[in-house]
Length: 80
Image (cartoon, rainbow, N blue to C red; front, side, top):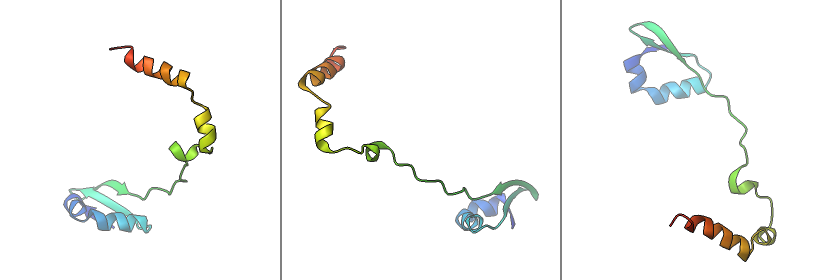
């Protein structure tokens, strides 16, 4: 399917759904094909952030100490 810019602007949702369904969607500028709208391939979801911490609370608590807390606090307060 080929649509002009104004139609694409007004019907973007429909065009995106068509592209996701595998239909070729061409957007034209003054009747001249300018871009092709294609769906992005689904990517594997990565586990990251806090979910990647595969540990229990006890092990996490043991990683910190009052000395380390004081050292970190000193780094933040050093510029004052």
